[in-house]
Image (cartoon, helix red, strand yellow):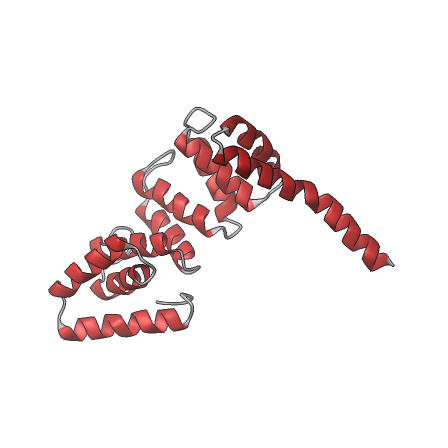
Length: 194
């Protein structure tokens, strides 16, 4: 009986959070950003990472609020620290381009890596480009190729084009090593790739 009461209580308490998020999504889809933010902000303040990411997105893009990169960084960080891959990738972008925070390529690569290890293709592509240029990480054609290959295999066309161009600059041995790295990374489901 106690378990049934606990499950019922969880469902009752949890229902408004899901309803608020769903209502926010409908409002956002209809470009009613004011309503979307009104529904999302309490959920974000309660620690829901999806809502935190969404609030960050709205502040970054000035949807329903005045564009505010610093506030976007705040919300992205809260969600990113809870493992939200899109927030991690977005926080990486904010660090890379110095939006609302001082540019820091090491921090950008850290957040890209966390998202990339969850299979986020855009983060994988961005991390590959960082390895290619040596931005925030030690330059490595093999590591760049590996991340670009993984992103390209998920349909990121820029990653595919960059991987193809990079391959022209690499020796056959380097390409073989990079392809082996990419296969091992995929086998590990992007965890502990390097």
